[in-house]
Amino acid sequence: MLGGLHPLPKLIVCLVWIVTAITLFDLRFQLFTIGLAATLLIVLERRSLIFVIGLMVPFALFGMGFLTTSLLFRQEADYALKLSAEQTFARPEVLAGLVLFFRAIACGMVSALFALTTDPGQLVRALMIHARLPATVGFALLQALNLVPDLAREAQQIRLARAMMRGRRPRRIPGPVEGASLIVPLLAFAIRRAGRAALAMEARGLKAGAPRSHLNRPQAGWADLLFVGCAGALLAGGISLAGLC
Amino acid sequence: MDHRSGPILQLIDRIVVLDTEGRILAEGNPDDVFHVHGDRMEAFGIWTPLACRLVRKLARAGISLPHCLTIHDLCRALDSHGHGAKAARVLECTFQPRALSLATPVVRLCRVDCAPLFGPVVLRDVSLQMNRGEVLCILGANGAGKTTLSQCLAGLVRPARGMRDGPLGAIAFQNPEAHFTQATVLAEMQKAGAVAGKDLAHLADWGLEGQADQHPFTLSHGQKRRLALAILTATDRWPVLVLDEPTSGLDQRGGDTIARHIARLAQAGRAIAVVTHDMDFAFTVCDRVVVLAEGGVVSSGLARTVLREGAIMTRAGLALPAVSPLLDWLEHRRC
Image 1 (spheres, rainbow over the protein chains, first blue to last red):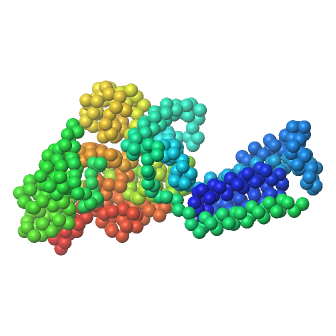
Image 2 (image 1 turned 180 degrees about the vertical axis):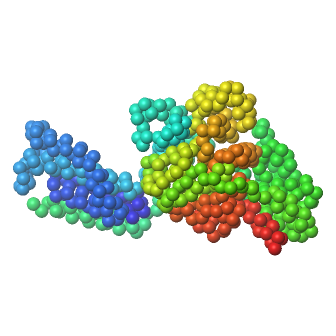
């Protein structure tokens, strides 16, 4: 559902939310952000609870670093301790660590929500049309977006071809020797693919400043306005929740 | 720019045909180009519409018809020029299905769910078998799961559910370069297990004897495809062969060559599966067809029957073969 929105308002909302989460040193706001992002993913995007919990794991590991730092090295976390001392319901060093821990998860979840609901190609196109991203950079990014799945497909074909010659199925995950043996053919493939992309971009007269039309332009509409309005209201609600105590 | 114009022929105003040296062979509106230069284009191995090819074939059999660009035009011309009976005989011979001996199963899939190596299940509850000496066509729109099914059929990817019974097969991948690991074409044959002395003869079978010392990556696209197939057929190691889009990027001559080799390999007793979008190629080379759509098999049966089922083809997002109206015409005459 969120995937149908214009990428730029969504990007701006997510950036504003992340900046707020970083500057607002409050545990309730961080928890509110995590809960909201998880709810949107589960309810609107039909992601499973396990998927959402799994998504939090890398951000939690990152946040764990902040938590241990604030508990074990209090001198270094002096600023955080000072801020958390203003909040009364836990020991300052624990609270500071918890806020930093959940802040990492909250920022990660907002980023993940944006990444999972945005078509990267549409985002690049929107940046070219509305944010003056140079066409040379934009089309290079679009090519890079295609190159990654192409490389994965090519790698899989080479692995299957080799397994076929050996007379057995390929291992699910390639071992270090097999992985290393894929580097040269994949590099050769990537170079040839990049050469073709460069020719295609050259053939399309891809120079800066030239007037350019776009197919599949992302269109902003009422849904985007509604999204920005709701997000603004929720953000204001989250901030006031933090300011209550 | 394309090897064939196919369904967009009616939209084309002007055609420029290049020969193998890059010189302009013919130029003008499609009607004139195919009418006036059709024979020369055929000699160069360049695609001409099926109707033009059939008109030329009928002319060689002594049946003179006006120039036709589409099969519908050809049917009308056959009706109005009074050569119906004789033309029908020639055409019946042209589209005669291959006689198949008793089906001996080589590979069986029994209620399998197929998923790519790192992906979710894309096909559910598929049951089918590949028989010795038979050419099976796997049809479906983009993303229907043709490549995934072909990997399951060859046994290179284990089914997510269900059972596969049969020996390991080989796949000729869409990108033939995935097969190449050696510095010369001859070395590829030797690596594939071709017996010394017979390797050059095998290359000659595939029209590659002149390229034996060349690096595989320097071959043309058609030659690369043939080399990949030559590698896979150098020994009797694989009784099952899956060809993934064997005609993509090939000209008419390249496609005809592949079709000839497929028929030869089937005759030699291999079980062959062809994954393709080219309905006319499927009609020409395949005995049996499996149509994939909506996450499973929506139809399977004899190619002659399934390929003419308009409702099934529409459901699978496919077009009928160009030859369809002519087969209807032949059937109508028989009645």
